[in-house]
Length: 365
Image (cartoon, rainbow, N blue to C red; front, side, top):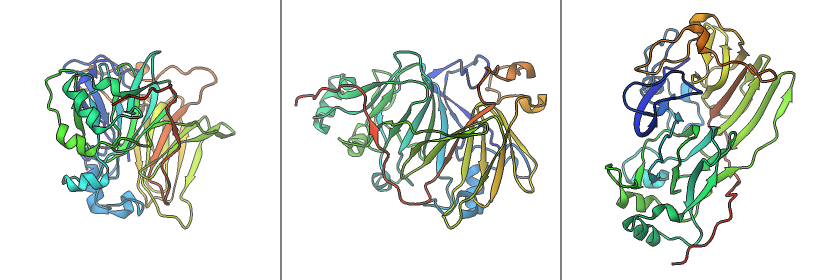
């Protein structure tokens, strides 16, 4: 099933969402585009109009998979981020802290970098030697940014941000974020912008040392116009990147717990084929959700979709685009379709190995 995305205004967002969605935005800046939010609705087939939350509650493990910790909730929230200004310095709780605060789960996330002009950075984790006491004083003295590790971003980077990591994102990047299905964010510091802070709750959620950092790139497995590379495997999610110029059949592994699959197109167009339902086309910026009960699907890249299928999701407040403008020009030698497949781990795994590539100085008490 293909889902309609939800466009969310943010004070730090942008009015131009290229290269994912065409057209200038009228109205407030859009910072986040939710692809698998609880209220995202099915766009095709007999379930059209139903929300992910409704389907998760009704279908349970057949939909989300036995790998999910709660069969009644969709397990992954996937978003595009378009920061034009800096995000707040913030932290998310882990599962244990979230339950104590009355939330269903914590929020570990990762960022796949699609676009990053030179100089684009993120602040990730506290520098060595920084304690919660230092954080409290730095917030009061309006110098919180000094306590963070700042690392440069490049297209293709995967940044892992486990719960409890103090972090922020600088302006300029276009990011696909995969996370636990939680929107719990504690703002610690917001550069004087008139938004609510959550210092008390945030201090309880902070971890002075975490597993956050860039995940080391893995080697791609390529053959006959098809390529797959695992960009991150963690206790909360698995993300693989696929590049296709030829069809690829995906089959469920035998004797393993199952997970829902979320296919997000980041370049080009494709069609998802399975037994029974009509073929589902999807384009850059769209997601197709494959329920756990589906045994196999074939993903077929499409260089030229019919006009009714080629139209990208329309940003609210923008005019409809003619079909010839909807497709990104294809660069010779590039695949016809690139997408990320996000799922749950079907066995116990550790946090990924990460690195902070900059030289980091210790902050004295």
